[in-house]
Length: 106
Image (cartoon, rainbow, N blue to C red; front, side, top):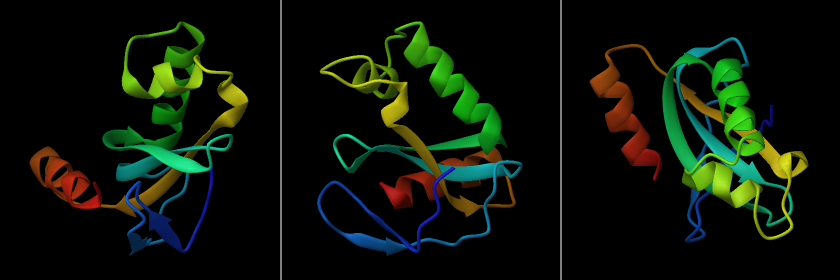
């Protein structure tokens, strides 16, 4: 799992990261980074642990699932080795609150 003090979105805006997230954290907003492109390709949320979401994304890449994250990493010379995940914020509250907070990171 990647750690950083800030997150830069595709438009170049920087956001402070609350480094209270580890792989065992649940109820988080996270970002997926591509090492090859050196950019973030997706911001998402999960009620499960960050580790579970990491495994799910790797499985979807391996099976060439049709979703934006998987497609990025199995096309155009990319691989699972280029995949990084970073917790942005651990939350407390409802699924609805987590989804609202996810939108604020986008």
